[in-house]
Amino acid sequence: MTDPLLSVRNLHVQFNTDEGVVRAVDGVSFDVKRGETVCIVGESGSGKTVACESITRLLPMPPGEIADGEILFDGEDLTDASGKRLESIRGGRIAHVFQNPQSALNPVYPVGAQIVEAIRLHRDVSKQAARDRAIDLLDRVGIPEATARIDDYPHEFSGGMKQRVVIAMALSADPDLLIADEPTTALDVTIQAQILRLLRDLQDEFDMSIVFVTHDLGVVAEIADRVVVMYAGKVMESGTVYDVFDRPSHPYTQALLDCLPGQGESMRPIGGTLPDPKRPPAGCRFHPRCPHATADCRAGDHPEPLTVDAGHEAACVYYGPGYDSSVIRGGSASESRVADGGAAVADPDDGHDSSGGDAR
Ligand SMILES: Nc1ncnc2c1ncn2[C@@H]1O[C@H](COP(=O)(O)OP(=O)(O)OP(=O)(O)O)[C@@H](O)[C@H]1O
Ligand code: NI
Image (cartoon, rainbow, N blue to C red; front, side, top):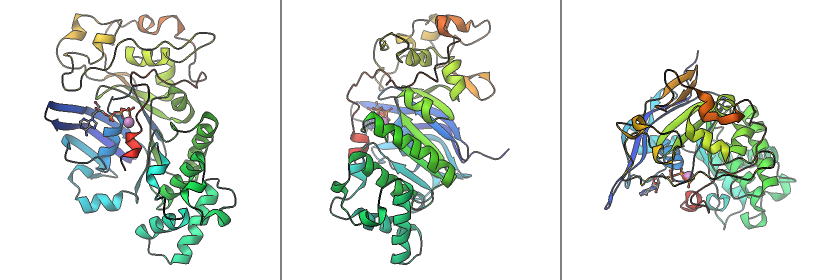
C-alpha cells in the first residue's frame, strides 16, 4: 500500500484574539490518497477553510497559528517548512481554487498573460512555449476558441468561464493536489454541474488528488470518493461516499442528510447553531443540538473517532457496544441517499460569506 499523498494528523489551528482563543481546527486528521477526491463538508464556521488554508499556510499567520499537529505532504511535514519552501509548493505541487474566480484574476491583464506568468513561475520555458501551453490548458478546461480568447481580459468572461480560466491557471504547474474551496458555490446550478464534471475529467487526465470543500451534500455525492464531515473544528465522521450516505453513523451526519429534500418533503434545517468557538461545550461538540444526547455526551472530552468499518470512523459516544444504528438513522436507513443530490446543507449563516475568496 502506498502512503497517502497528504496526511493531516491531529491538526490544531487557532486564532489568538482579544476576546480569547478561537480553536478553529481542533485536532483534525484526514488522509488524501493519490488520485482521489476528498470532500470536506460541514456547516458554515466548522473550520473547513481554516484547515485547508493551513496546508500551504495560505492562512495568514498571525493571526492564525498552527498550535499542534503534522501536515505530511508526500512525506514532508509542511508545518516545519520555510516560507520560501511553501511558496514554491503553492501553485506548484499544490494549487488552490476559491469560490470567487474574480479574486484570483488580475482585472488589468489578459487572462493568457496571467496563465503564461503562472507557467513560467514554475517552469523554465520560453514565452512562446508557455503561451502554447496556456492555449492548450484553456482548451482543456473547455474555453471555446481558446486561441482567439487568450488575449481577452477577465471581465470579458462569464462567471463560469472565469472559474474555468482559474482552473486552467491552477493546472498550469501540473499540481499533485488541487484544493478547491467552494469553487462552484457562486455559480448557477447548470454551470456548477459543468465545472464538477470538468474537475472529474481533469483529475483523470492530470492524475491529481482533489480536496474539495463544500457545504452542499449534492456536490459531495457528485464528486467525492471519500468524505470528511467537520463540525465546530472537529471531524465527526469520515469514510467513503457510500459509507457516509448509506450508513451515516454520527447523528450530525444524519442531521445533515436530513436536510436533503427527499420525495415530496421539504428541507429540514438542523435546529440550533454552532457553538461559540471560543467556548465550546464540554463533551461532544454536537451534544446541545443532538436529539440522541445522553449524560455521557455532555461531559468529558469530545469523543475519539471509533471505527465503524475499515476506513469508516465516527466520533460519537453513542456509537459503542450495543449501538443500535436504526435509532439514529430512523426509518430511512436502507434508502440510498447518494442518488438524491442537489440540496444545500441548511446553513445558519445563510449567505455563505465570500470572504474565503475575496480576501485574496
Ligand atoms: N482571522 C480569524 N480570526 C478569528 N477567527 C477566525 C479567523 N478566521 C476564521 N476564524 C474562525 O474560525 C472558524 C472556522 O472558520 P472557517 O472559515 O474555517 O469555516 P468554514 O467551515 O470554512 O465556513 P464556511 O462554510 O462559512 O466557509 C470560525 O469560527 C471563524 O469565525
Ligand atoms: Ni470556508
